Structures are given as structure tokens and as C-alpha cells.
Image (cartoon, rainbow, N blue to C red; front, side, top):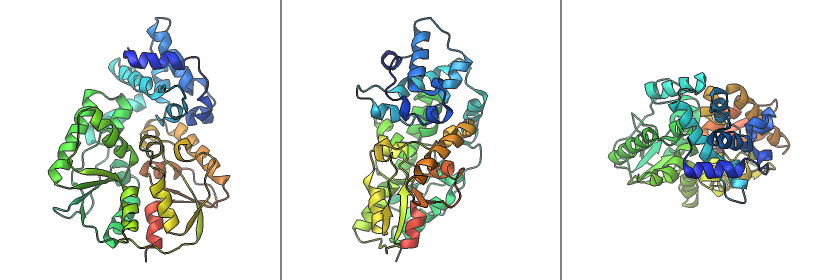
Length: 360
């Protein structure tokens, strides 16, 4: 069932408890089956013929956010998401994936996004050198984040365009069914669309899309002609160049690092530099930067909303301990998830809306 390398990782993890305290799902559910060790042990047993890969085991493989906290903390370099993704592929092949997961897959095949909805479009200019890749979560669930970012580009005098028929990057489908040929074909279609736009720079709003574009695409032999840059890194450049001027808001906030920006892209400084430029004093959560606890993902929320509500509440608990009353994030998926559980007397805001308040 598993590739040789995935089997090696599962065997290494099966008797190791060293990352169990970092798993956001295991922490919130209290179920040993939700830890990376348990998943490795189960898959190792199936490879040895001591257990069968059945629907119950498949369901457990989907009770994971693929947040890489376990990988980040592993001093021996093993990667539980490697065998978890391959197990998801097998669940699809054997037709034992949970029904809510299959429904999300049907949504993607029918509409191109996890919500099964027509994806909204945004105003666009023609033949601009900069292309803004919005992504399905920002477009369908937190359009206010995308619109605030566009207004910041306007204030900085940046001419940009969007794609009327924006193709998926492969990020969602890859997390759902593993990095199969179908997912790689999705990535190839996205590269083709980006290249056809003629843009020199592609700004990516969602770190999940940026992570697959910058890490996975090269692994699949894909390469866009344009420079791919995250939305926060591009804004940070504009501030440094003096194209976007900010005044001090004189506030205190805490900041949530989403898992793909923090652990895949290792991008910590641009959002913090932007907060500092806007006069925001940062009260860091105990777990931040590459140790940040995942609040959930929009994909996971689409098929296990009860568990992702718990993980979002867990992250709010971390924020409450800072004494800050304002939680800032840049990730559309974090905005969707954290928005489900905002505590009384706390405010959730995306960085771009906050920076609009600071624009001179």
C-alpha cells in the first residue's frame, strides 16, 4: 500500500511519542488515534499483514490537518504527513474514504473548489505585470480580505490583474487524495494559466497555494515563468520602497502564524515587519513562528467541522493568554476557521484590513 519511503517513516514513528504533545487534533480530542504515532503504528501493522486497512482506519487518516508540527519537531527527520497522504490515496483507491470526504472531492470535480459553489470573480485590469492569485477560500469565504489587499495595491499605485477563470493550484486536492497524477495535472493547468497571463509577478494570497506552487510544483517538474511571491512579502517590499506609507495605530495585538507560511515557507518576518510599520506592539503567543499551533484548515473544516471547531478554540485559548484583545492573521483559511470561535471581548482581523486603517 505504501511506498518504500513512506513505509520507512511509518515504521520509525510507530513507537515514538516525542511529537504527540504538538498535534493540534490530538490535543483537542484527547484520542490517541489522532496522534502521528498511532497512525504510523496502524499503517505499519497493515503492511505486515497484522491488520486490515478498513474504513475506520481511513477515517483516522483524515483526522489530521497536515500541519507539519510533528515533522518540524522531529530531530531525526521523519515526516508523518508523508504516510498519511499516501494512506489517503489508498482510501480513495479502495473506495473506503469517509462520506464527507467523498462529498468534498465531488465538489472539487464539479466546481473546482471545496465548497461546490461558483467561485466569485474580482475586477481586473488587462495586461498588467502583476497578477493577484486570490484562491478559493478568500474568494468564497473571506472576500473582504482579498478586497482589502486590492485596495492596498491601489493605494501603492500597483497595476494588477486577476484571472476570470482562476484554476486551482493543486493544494486542496493534494491534501485530500495525496499527490497523485490528477493533482499534478491540476498544477500543470494552473502553471499554463499563469504563464498565459503574461504577468511577471504572481502575488499569492493563500499560503496553502503558495506552498504548493513553490515547493511541490518544482518536485513535479513544473515552473511558472513569473516570480511567485506571497501577499505579505510583496506588501513588505512596498513599505520598504516607500510606495505604501503607514501611520502608527498605537495598538497591541497577537499574531497567528498559519502552518504553511510558518513551516513550509518559513516566512515569519514580513507580517511582523508590517505590524511594526503600522505601530502595532506584538504580544506573541507561547507557540509562534515555526512552533505555531494550527487552528485548522478550510479543507478539513469542509469534512470534519466538529474537530476543526475544537482546534480553532484551542488556538483562541493560546491567544487569550497573551492579554491582547486583537488577533491578526494573513491566511484566508485561518480567518475562516478562527472566525467560527471568536471569544467575547476579542477581535479577529486580517492584516490587510488592519493596514488599511494605518494608510496615510
